Length: 101
Image 1 (cartoon, rainbow, N blue to C red):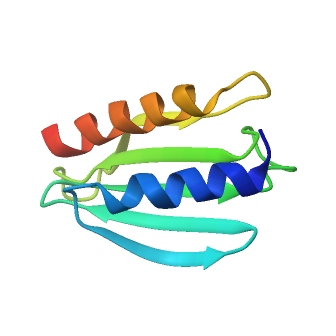
Image 2 (cartoon, rainbow, N blue to C red):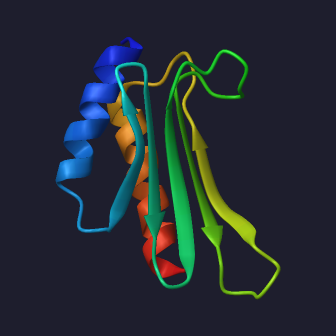
């Protein structure tokens, strides 16, 4: 699976979500999306992860309930062995944390 296939699958996945999402970057080689609820926010980054701990996809959820003590409650990084199903499963799990925060 290459980056182009992953980006296309992620764009399709985003169209079916009930969670408000703001697309910050949508290019042929990168996708960056911000999700916000009253108590949490999340960021999806997909692109060339050459200098990052992930291959193509990163998803981080932050709990915003404490005033100045913002803390990550979930993160997902894909790797060389990740399938599209693995990536979507990680993103769905992260959305559960986002909605429960």
